[in-house]
Length: 430
Image 1 (spheres, one colour):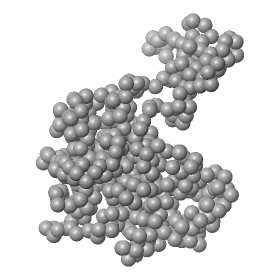
Image 2 (cartoon, rainbow, N blue to C red; image 1 turned 90 degrees about the horizontal axis):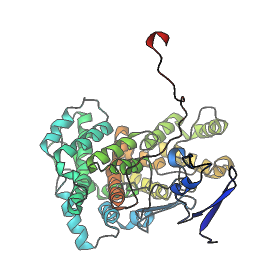
Image 3 (cartoon, rainbow, N blue to C red; image 1 turned 30 degrees about the vertical axis):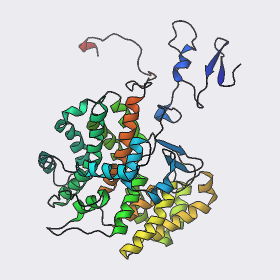
Image 4 (cartoon, one colour; image 1 turned 120 degrees about the vertical axis):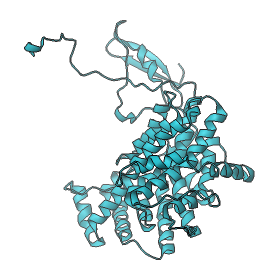
């Protein structure tokens, strides 16, 4: 008997089945042969929220949650954050390898040339209410882009597909910045082709009047690192949404809009704002012990920014962001008073047996909100800043899905728990 198989004995029938094991998995369809009789549909798995189901094979991102490892195309996230720019990482996600100098210059030029949006997009964004949430505007506007580029439906043409990927990567910061400016009642700022990807985004957000915006290079680099840390994260909720919508062969703008909508949810992209809310509620270091006590006793406190669906160790991105926060605060010349509260929370959580046993380590959201706040970026924009870089990962995963011969239109099964067949009674008998 092969060692790369799994033997299953069905105690209902006494029959034994041998299933092939590949990469530590069995194919769910192989279970369908396990039946009580010929009229039986066959065995299925029940896995709410896909907690133990692999939906695809992917070479984009590797995560080992127990060891706290995150790699993009084999490169550790810590090294990418230290040695690469965001556009280099985006190129890596798209193409599988880091660019050389010529490739990076060409890619940067291509992205830069597509940062402008059609003038009608300006009118579209101005149609939102004055107090519309920037994420809501981002979702709607990205979806609307599909009407500006109807050729994007030709997803099987490689050159056309890559053009749309570059367009999306280039236009997300512009749409994001304009959504912010609209929510602030400020005039829109057009892209500046002389600026880098990240500096251009900051300029479109923060420029006042006709004065040229000049950002501190260290602040630009800090935001670029944050973009790198958020570029992709395997099969999370929004990426799964991108793949599911893309599996119907919808255009990439519609798929990215759907993924952005998934990110909008507070359980996904809104976690760092929840951390800030928690830190403000705690208020000071003196109140931390009482708060942690309430968390352990379940009497009202909830520890945000700790723990992760995947990581059962220290999130490697959180280690980078923690160092980044100190550097940003030094540059700005001010310390966010909530930082002391955050550090004390982390100290207690890493020492207290209650949290250690539950493997509650800081995740990427724990410190990122503090950095955004000290950069005078409002809380409503936090998830938008998440969506900009994650677009690179979504698009890489989308293209990989399209080229995967195993993939079909996403259509999970269900276990029906409703009424059995019955007749519709006359209205006067209901």
